[in-house]
Image (cartoon, rainbow, N blue to C red):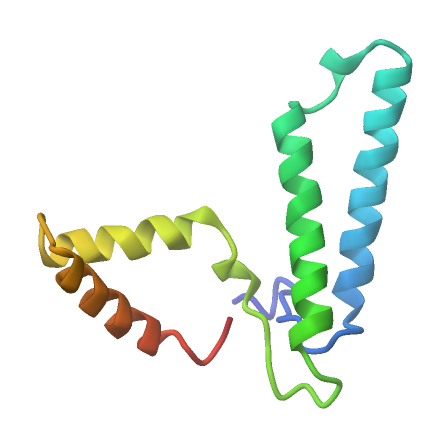
Length: 120
């Protein structure tokens, strides 16, 4: 199970996973700068991957600080923050109707959004 693997949802603006995320980004940033300074950019992950890592950390950190409360009444389901969720969402709309009108797509979106509205 995810709990056995150490998975925890971020449930407060001061959750320890946020510190870990910042640490990961700092490590990548230092590596990025070192590779750049030594003319070894080809020894680093692709620039777009590095930017994705930075935006992932900034986004998760920002959402946590802005939306979550110390009383832990809300939780962030990090597994819903990837493009797979978006792709799956639009595939579900298309599966209901292979050639949806705007109204059909809006109705499908409303139904699926209502289903997932408990967590963000």
